[in-house]
Image (cartoon, rainbow, N blue to C red):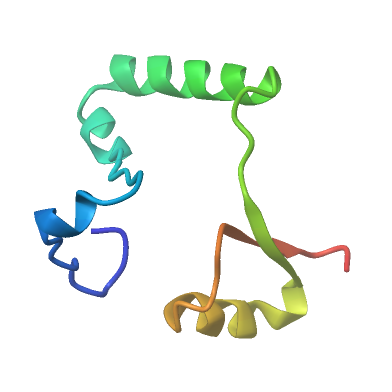
Length: 88
């Protein structure tokens, strides 16, 4: 579970119409092995450096608005990654 909100049950019948995908990845399993974690991180950052993976930046907040950024995340009003920028 990636948030404090319990998971939503999915009714399989709702997936039949249209093109829908359910996908997930939990990096937590990699923390049990330093070697595996290192391999995953090296590959992940390599893909990012090659431009093959691009994080979705939803909104950038000044560091002074960290509280507001947190409220937006907790209120589930964000999409993508929320970043704090101390330079703005």
